[in-house]
Image: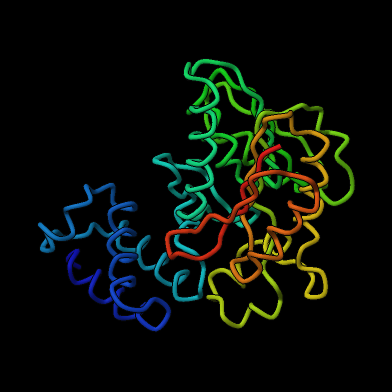
Length: 285
């Protein structure tokens, strides 16, 4: 089978799950990744014959995609802040909007210390794949970064991301204790669970059926419990003049902001994502 024919067939099959050009983009990306092709090849050489073993692999991948499995889990990686991170069913797939959180942290550190090599301490709560912790560490190698998560499966993956001096990853429950938060820290970041169960019908099956529920959902009757817990940890572990930023449910922006105002932080503000939705609360001590 020719490359263009497979992509066209796959895109048509995937169109009920992925609207518009998204199905075509996924089919093209699958081929470039699995066949180790340059990104332009599907457009410039659709006549390329797919070898038998490659076609068998692609057909198997397509079946998994049609069952709703995320492309990133099938490939075993996702891109975040220009780097390829390992992902699997035990961790959330990094989202492009979360790169804004990293950019806010790096901007704060740049303003705090003109010398990028100046040491800093960063605490990343609910670290998951470790994409935030690793990115900050790799962008600011002189810093000491600690990532915390309740899942040992997620921590094992986080520790294995790169063969380089990396963050310290420890097991801890943000809702139970902050004993592991041996501050003070210059920066505290978090991408905790924040989705309400009532929002699940609006979400795609590749998220609800495959990504870990432990990292997604908060109780319907207490959607701000992570915000309150993180605000409490930051109140004790963030150094004076320190900075924090937390990813939040875009429908609970003002309520999330209030959690940090009540904890006594200053310059508490909402930050919008790529779709102009309230996606983060940033604060200083």
